[in-house]
Length: 464
Image 1 (cartoon, rainbow, N blue to C red):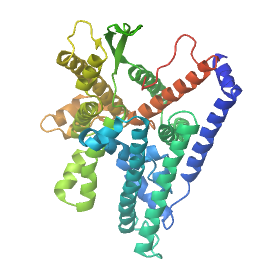
Image 2 (cartoon, rainbow, N blue to C red; image 1 turned 30 degrees about the vertical axis):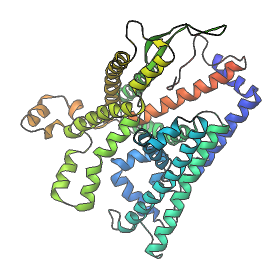
Image 3 (cartoon, rainbow, N blue to C red; image 1 turned 180 degrees about the vertical axis):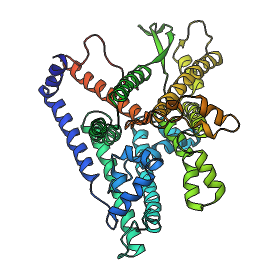
């Protein structure tokens, strides 16, 4: 009843009600646009081609687009170019003094960087749209049907496809910004969230049909449900986890006023990189498969086979890539030296630690340790769903592979055959965005003296 009362409170506040309805309305527009196909596409041939290649990077990206990539709709590129442009701008902020100066100019600098991100999004959309259009024209389905209707010329199709896909991405970017400004929650994150959860009812229905047809036993269904609950609980626990370093500020007397003297803490999140390390790792590890399909070389083909999902080399490089990008990303967005200097400038210090370099080294040591824990957590979240679906193919290991394949149980080498729609990456995004959105709604309710969703404590979002 408390939850129902909280939902009733949301619609009892006029401003909050308008924000929620505005958010739902724009998300509905996004879902409608995901079903409008790109002109000139042979839908039957493309669906056949996608089914034969859905296990790789195409299937991974299609989850984030909410099925728009499978249909190659006007929103097929989704919000991916915007995310890529944002990451590029973040990296350039560290190495380019001009952007670094802008980032320190407050609201005006933030607006300029946002504008540059929009320009970068359009440029990346044109480049990606051109590549997709040329690839569509030169590719055929397994049955030999061309993916593009040949009654229109190559140049007109490429120009039309680039214009359509670029416009669709720009419109999705605008929808996300409008949700952030006038709705509730982060618009870009909610668009990704909507794309992922849009396929959840279909996945549940397909699982129930498998149980009815005898393709999945009730025991396996119970294991799947239990696994989903445990993974979601673990993600909530780790995403809220922080290492709080105590900080004290010395008292300062300015005129007749006394400043400082309070005790606070420096919060360091266990998983600072979020889902970005997984996206980087899976993009790089899938790249040889596209080289193999493009060049048709035997060497590239053998490499692509070793890097297929479930192979030992894939699991090893995937896990190592996630750990590497966790440390790489935290080194980009967090500078212990600057943090220690700002603390010293305002009279702050860590008890028992000298200000300056000693404080910087201490923060760096703590950050290194908790980042390792967060990286291992991401590796487990990313690999467990793949293990349930197809297991670990140890038979391809040299020397000991055949022995391990005969010794280990079938559920390790072959998996449980579970069709797990929510992979580790998508589950991480869904849970994280849900936590952020609930935290914002909770803040709005409490600010207006309404009872929120939680009575004993306030939920902390991922950026708390």
